Length: 487
Image 1 (cartoon, rainbow, N blue to C red):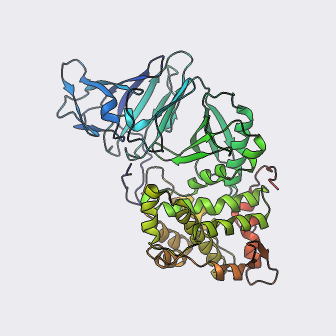
Image 2 (cartoon, helix red, strand yellow):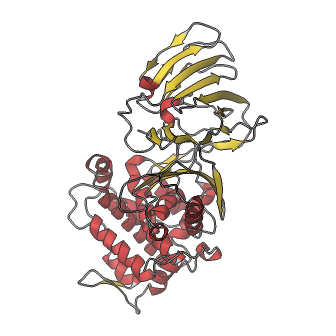
Image 3 (cartoon, one colour):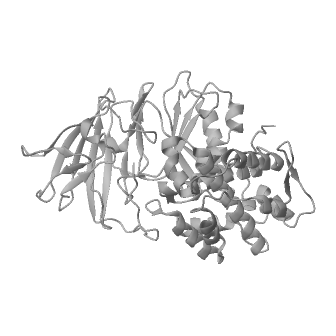
């Protein structure tokens, strides 16, 4: 699924739209058939788009309201041609009978007990682009006892039906909507309200404990610069995942707004959830705006770096353990000569499953950025402060970035050339980053058995300690609730 790149300095309008297209969405009692009535304000679009390649096979008829005119999909396009102003069309989508052969991770349509998680791209046919004065309002008409979880911005409706505005994000950014017998709850942490839906599972998920787990994790990520990077996010908890870990699978999506989906093994003890790294990793993705998939090394590297740093700051692990885990990650990702560049490795990882190099080379670049920023500014700037500045200017949920452009922006915000230098040195090179000099300056020595020794008389010992404590950055202003230690 390819994301449409928006210019990195594009901004969304905060003005109230003057043309609002209205979509009424209904789903049957079996959570199998979605029926959509789309009414266009003024001039109707000449075509509608769907994100999923399976959308055409799931579509069961699309007609112009009040006429016999039918529309047939052509791949991911539904050509409407010239319609009268203020036209409405109606269509139905069979969610269950679609073959789903193009759903590869992301947001697959599937049953979860008596609930359903749906790939939004299978059933939302919408204009490919919206003008600044346009928006789409989505209103759900649900069977009794059924709730919905959606990634968009909720608005109040006089009739009480769940209603949202979808905004100006690209139509082909993946997203998911869940329907089921859950009650969406708000989990608050400093600066953010997580809209959490826990889907059906056997045994039943302990919802209070999962809510507390999410609250602590969001509070932990929020310590980076005193607030969570986004003010609201959809969170789906999908039980029944197989594996020996509490969270065998998780991801972040950006279509319609920030969203984090966790596929959990609810049979694992809560102590394992509290000690697990994946929730911090996934929420740390939100420290950056959407980064195009070709540059996933940047988003995954940032999350891999902070999954250890932030857990140390929260007391989940001690600084020595955090450095040891990071060093082990570098070894897993970079223990053999590279045959391709980082760009090529990123492009290939979805086909060959070689994620470790991409994740951990990206993390090494972020460590080097952090170490160099602290050294060149005598500790007044760091990766924390750079991301803080980025969060204040450039986290639009409707804007996508390439890594080169994002690194240029970080240099502009820090008044340095640290990021451009690292990009040129490592992204288009088959030479793996050497963290040895950074380790020497920070006072980190790797022993023969792979352990990490913290050296006292190192030039940047204070920076090393600050990385894992958050001292000297905005992180010190907000303390996360203590987390149980995994030691």
